[in-house]
Length: 426
Image (tube, rainbow, N blue to C red; front, top):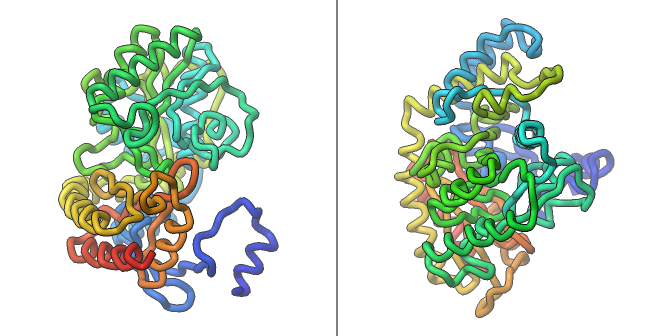
């Protein structure tokens, strides 16, 4: 046991999870690679939980942060803040939401908290629809709408939450249906649920569920839901904390795969926009955003230094077409992973979109989750120089793969080869 691990255990809560039997200290990174305190080099296929979205030590971002730090680091939202306004303008234009307003926070949890506050205040209702197997953060209100028991430590809640089918395509009562029938069944379930309740504030949904194991419904499900929601005046919150900024390759936002009936009423974001800096936020049409009739500020949301990072990172992402790279390299990586999975009996499914891929593991010959295999694959991958993540419903048996969006073809092949060795060793 390392000295740092002993010190960690002495002062950090037991429920703050660490990966690996022998946890590693990451000391520095460059591009798609990081190094630990022992000098070991790793190909990073998890990016600090999808947060180092572009690259480690990206010169354009580090330069912007350094220059801003030399001017002023903090002022709060009580003062005009040029970098905050500039980033808000760009995000509002990219969001697809008409007459959009942007409020910055420091995390995805806080962004979802804010969206829930706005929706419940606007609709004057404390009832929220959420998806089964969902995850929306670790605050009291975010935990209360999380549909994944492993990440919901209390049954107490400031909200009434009702859970809807549809976030998981390959499991559950509708798994054997065609995509079209699956959507019909989920819409019927939503209609039935709304027939048993009243005055619902909003539906919150991840277009691709992150912690839940990168599961998603068929394209168009939330567009079909939107028709039902609109009849009841219910708002749609798209949680884009993990799916935003082009990671899925096909679309800039996850909601665009369900955009037949227009954009969501509210969109939450975080993680990748700051490329490691603490940036989150909410986009909403003005009528919804401005419904708050009390004073409010954010001490750290919209900090000049994090806004400078976000502006530089967003500019780099757009100028270098990283969405296109996610589509091209991610498509190749998914094909490679599917070929590997076909030869490994523990692999139930390889799924994903762009540079957001998952490998679900089961006990061979069954449909039973296999968390021990996932833990073993995680360890073996690290031993061979690859960092990946875990997730999934019921039991953590899904390997999550989400490299920085600048990933090269050669690095994708290298990572796939390491993962193949890890899976074949199970």
